[in-house]
Length: 193
Image 1 (cartoon, rainbow, N blue to C red):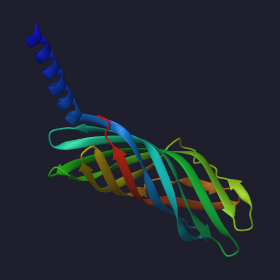
Image 2 (cartoon, one colour; image 1 turned 180 degrees about the vertical axis):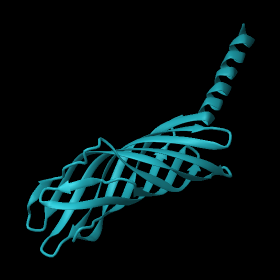
Image 3 (tube, rainbow, N blue to C red; image 1 turned 90 degrees about the vertical axis):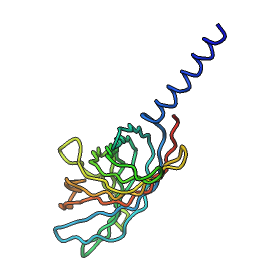
Image 4 (cartoon, rainbow, N blue to C red; image 1 turned 45 degrees about the vertical axis):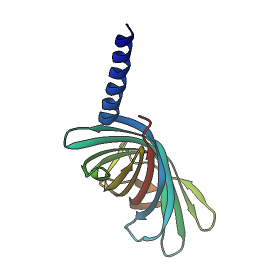
């Protein structure tokens, strides 16, 4: 009976270790530097420091890994026309799906699509006027992310670039323009198992 208990405990530890190598999950947070590209008589100005927080999961397959994430993201930027400067702020739900390969035991290369849902947005002119951003008619906008990552123990760090494939915002009240959001993203995560 004592040997059976030891075998069951060891089996549980081994299966837990294998499961941890195949599937892991944990929190993720970080910062981003985003800007807004504009057309139709407007000029892009300064980029804006933003942040994100959420969770990730990783599925390690024999050659590649899949890493879906769900993140609350705050980002934005600024632009101007001949008379006013505008600061914009976006609160979004971002859902990236990274597909990557591990190089050695530490370094990762990854890329994949990201779907974004605009939760809230504001535009503030330099005269103090604040306006709500009208989201696009589609529920989600789409983009891509690509970058590198490092895994050290249970910690992971990602450096990614995000580009837009569809409009982030179709229009501001009284400002018809096409904004495209690009970001440089640095993230830290922790594998819980």
